[in-house]
Length: 268
Image (tube, rainbow, N blue to C red; front, side, top):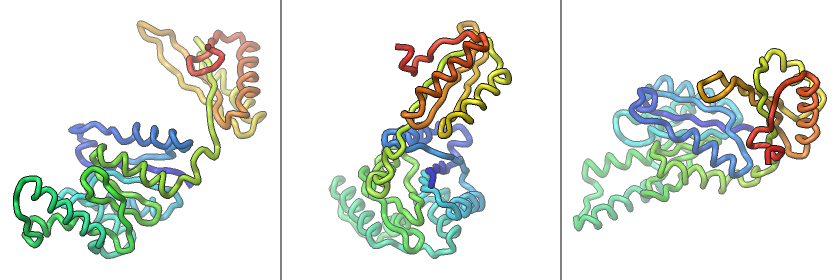
């Protein structure tokens, strides 16, 4: 089981709005000892959203989807989730009650009476139509819920709503997975070397220390920094010290110039 994120909306792909979900969801998961395995960006095209969801429903991952669950013509996620599962859309009774409570509160705050059967208010109930069998995700911001079905969790595109809803899902349904495999990393900055020349050392360390991954992040030379590679190891914390020591020995034997990275305890 992994964790995936689907970010839906033309406004992201056109650049009209900048995505904030990816960075935040990574942080939310990291706080709980989890990590994001993949993400996809999808525009407001029903066929593409449906195809994306068909693929993700066929897998075993926990998937969060942001955006497109409103009731305007450019909101398609609810319909696409139903189509991907070959299920009808039905008005969820809890969602109906939440939406109507929101309508009443909004009217009361404005000193107005409310007609729940007006065309506008009946249209608002569309936001509570979910694939048959779905359950609600509470929305602490305005009480209009998202929905969950088959390890997929659909929340609005607004960060102020989406992020606490995603946290609620994790804390309510996946707390048993938190911090099961605490991971860390140790790295150093290697100056002037080429990745190709370091590859045999990287492969040797991964073979010698099962469960440890070696990573390299090259950076080009600029006016303010030398060309360098951040080279390190990551994995379960108990495995890292001997692997990192082996990495440093290998660099010394190769005559490489390197210093501990700022995220390494050796830099303190």
